[in-house]
Image (cartoon, rainbow, N blue to C red; front, top):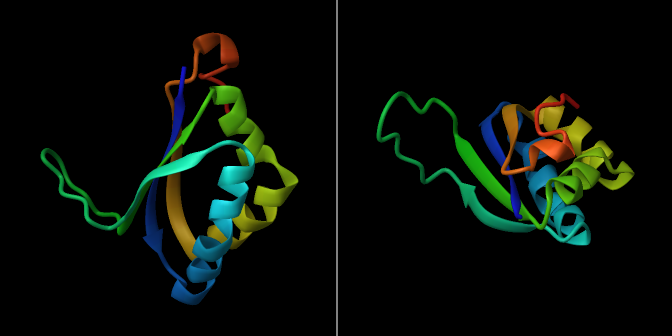
Length: 104
């Protein structure tokens, strides 16, 4: 069953974030992931949308999504993103047996 990484981002350092955007897709692909959506063209149908960017990634499994997120390749980029943007990163669709309720 596919699993999805859903990210809401507010950018604080555009130059650093652009470096992240340039390098992240290669790491996603290396773990079998693909981008379903990335950008700022988002409209709240209910509630408030205060973020600048939404990204939705699809992986074959929750294990693959976690392997990408925890990988050495992505760790450096994750640290770059931490300095460049405020984010909420969610894992959706992972089977409970895969530890969907655990924290990284």
